[in-house]
Image (cartoon, helix red, strand yellow):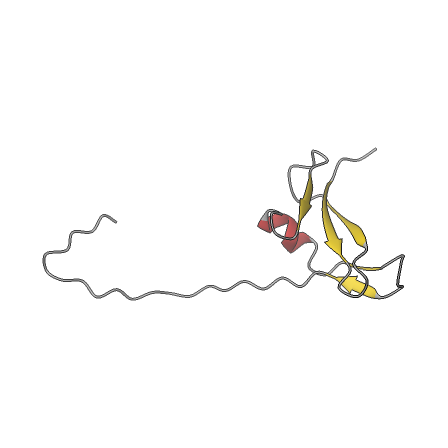
Length: 82
């Protein structure tokens, strides 16, 4: 039997807990929520969908990443460690 990690996703329609399985993490049978799952596991599940057994709606996980650059204004007396 293969090892995996799980993310429990509550159906937005009826609230039923649904298990999504990923082999991207440590694969130690850890169980996560959407709030504490490691990014690599969430990215692995981003295209996964399943039918909720309670309400029969199709559910899935949407993953968005926000990445941006910052520009800082430095004064002459500021010391920076790079």
